[in-house]
Length: 144
Image (cartoon, rainbow, N blue to C red; front, side, top):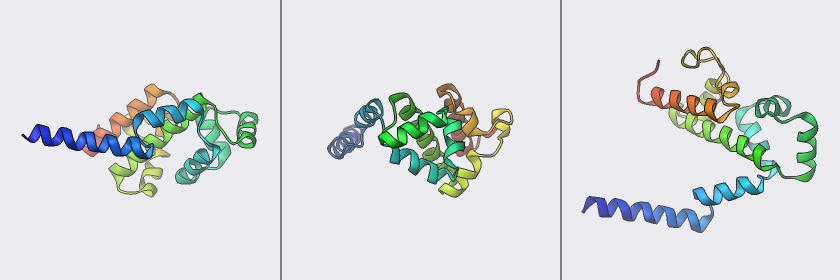
């Protein structure tokens, strides 16, 4: 009985996400089409980084950044990197309780990453997964 109730809750949540365009399929479609430049600006503001520093961490050259700003849209690969950093910021904010503490943690060398700065480590998907794993260990008290 409990399993049926849980399944209905999950189905209801998915239906709401599909209706308002916030489910995984909608997010993948947005990334593949290219995110609006304003999402990069929002991420920059949330992380408290100058645009040139964030673009370096995202692996986007200055010239490309200016072209994307003028066009108003990022390419799919750039959008994927922005979505990756958004995901990490959201997880860190959940673990640490707010964006300010998450921002500080993401920009400070971490012992659990061999002394690397999480946002630098997250330049690749493999590195981002390691940052997520470390956040999970912190959340559950298994910090190492």
